[in-house]
Length: 110
Image (cartoon, rainbow, N blue to C red; front, side, top):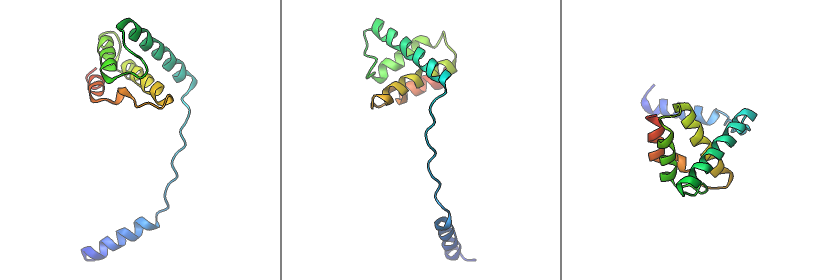
């Protein structure tokens, strides 16, 4: 089979495959919601003490928060704190400051 015939077969095969329906978003487990609420409350408290706005938070605030906790919390706990901050922003229709490169770099090196 030459290259053109092979490409035609691939193109036809792609058309014949039914599209998959997007998976519905699952609600987080109750324990996750409880932990996120606790993580969010801790972030709000830290922001008040630091004189920073928790919502909408700027990436520099979230990076400073993660850096301040890096010696005390595990990488998983830090990632969950960032996820809780992101979830609060999403719930309010705001972009997540936790997806900023400075924050993701800190989390990767935690």
